[in-house]
Image (cartoon, rainbow, N blue to C red):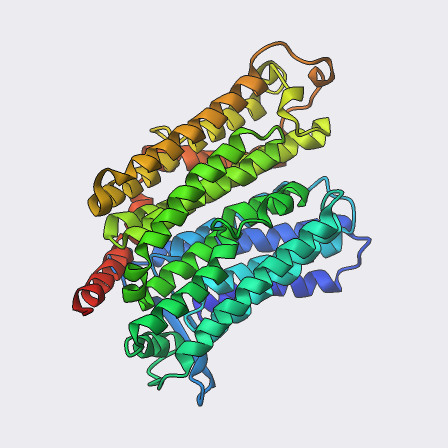
Length: 493
């Protein structure tokens, strides 16, 4: 078994062992689940340590033919796009399970679903075959449906059904686009992903545009891109806080990751649709920021802010230049860490107070200083302040956008200002003024909560002060991708 297969199938092995563990053995279930997520994280760190960031090609490739006639294969590989996402997925899954120690309902089923979700997510980022990619993409729907519908809030059934219907609807368009490319003469050179890249070059421009629109609908639902975001606020609000970490921190990035892969395959169509992509990005940034600004529910605020921040990702992708795409990839990592930390800390507050209304709080810094410190740092990072990882990502996107469109990117700055407005408003309501009577006896962070939230905030600050390792991790692959796009776009008639 290759290294990437070992990484991929470790959570699946955890699912098998948990299935054989008696439901009454709650302590053993928690131990096994956390052990396997920790082992997955260690394996991922091990892959990163031997990964060569100066080589933009696929590394540690594994290939086993599944259907030679179709060209599909069990093909795994990692490059500068997938490596940061693998690290993010494994880190956030570990943090989510550490934040789930107080769960008492159907503990076995919950942990099985989380590990199955991690298996699907890792498969999406490791797959180098479109058929395999699509399978893993659909695998993630099953555990999420149960995690929201079984362990969510009062409207959990509506939220889970809403999420699945939106995502399955998008998947239909994605599948149609894949089938449209497969109608061309596939050369079966390497995996199905490689063959489809070759076939896409022979497609007329109008067909490429239609295919890219199908992918945009499929991946745009998951990102989410306005107006395909209808599932997100309800799902985030009703999902357990630990699952909101995974939803916002990593599931949204699957859509952006897939869109980048597709744009490399269809750069001429991306250039044709560039005005649409820019409009959706800028509108989403402002729209999401304004909706976040008017929320009194803390989880709803973070959920709508995700629409705004993922608009920044889409803007970076739409530039089709190296700095912009680099900013998009950095923002995917930055937002995953920041949104994960915010959902985790808001969830911890809710467990103690049973309210998410920001008006019910005040003066928390004197009651729960450790939680307050981490929440303040996370909100400052969400503003994109220098010294935090979000600033590095937004700066790359801003410069890449300016290179492409000049002063049009002032709209981007409006979105940044709106983000600062709702973050400052939240800071003011949570931490200033007198302490409400109901908040005077709150418990501060427990050791597992401190470990989970502290590790995320440490990464936010550490990568903000020293971003070079994160930038270097993707630089070679992004440079290669940018070159491929420019060569294809330049040759286009």
